[in-house]
Image (cartoon, rainbow, N blue to C red):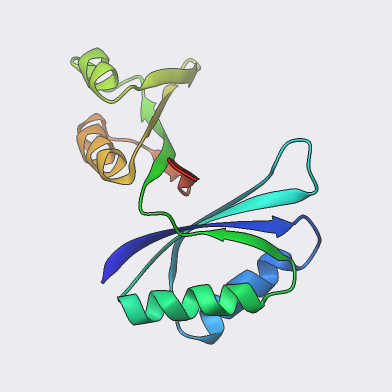
Length: 156
């Protein structure tokens, strides 16, 4: 089961996301990550999908996506820049020694704080975000929120 990245450019209208999700669920394919955002100064949105499957399943997904009316373009490039965001809430009562070194090594920063918690933010590829989350466990996080992948093709 290979991890697959697909970028789909769709007309920005209601119901499009529902049709894409329905396509996956109706055929028994799993969506590991899904993010959607409008493309600035256009009538389109970019849907970034991370899924898993063999080559045959991936080909079926692409064929079915092309059949959806509002799909403008499907990008199935071999090379994408793939980033995720994670927010981690840790109590200030924890021993925070070494936190600065962890943040530097994962391009992390303090996104917010109050008198009881720090909210840490990091952005990187999915494997490094997995490792960041494992590393942050030593600070006894009270909450972890992870975004889906945002992808853009390296070459057109």
